[in-house]
Image (cartoon, rainbow, N blue to C red; front, side):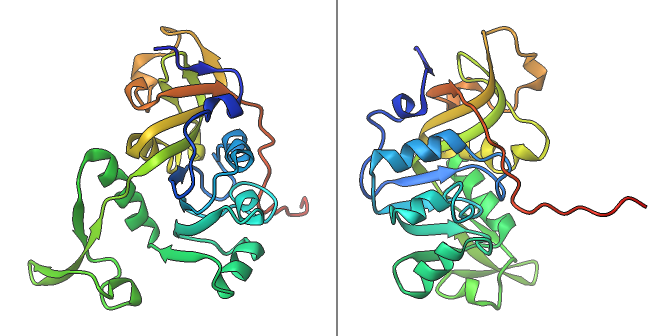
Length: 232
């Protein structure tokens, strides 16, 4: 199978549609699939359910899709850096399903592993637990959370080969590997694209079997919040 595409627009060709569910990797602006998010915006797909740790910022990352009002619902853990998100949510334009961060990560991992649901203590006794099944294990109450899957997963890696094997770098790994397993179709963008055999097998984080399309991107790598201190 030929997996390599020359542009993000081509890589999403035939994959986008109204009402789709999309997973997008990243934590803040670290490790986000910058090029693929722009291509998704340009596709014009609307009423998207976006599963991502956060919604980017107003003019970068998933914030671009909020500007165009293509996202109908966010399944997230933290959205505090996006004023556009706040405005749309408070006005009733945008649905939100909040998750504790560890729960969100496990829901995505479970979806990729074919696990429909699991129990966790996180959220018991809070708004998170409302309407969810409760069950006691070893004298402690747990709530049931469901696995998450997507029509399309967009991930960003440091290196990849032409068969879709991926290596992530440091904290940019974040949600990307688990999302790669949970999409019906996964498209990856990488900083370096090499031939099969050039990646050390023991260093591969995501096997190419989970990745259907791959491209080499160019990256701005914008910093979400820059904190500096004066030299002593």
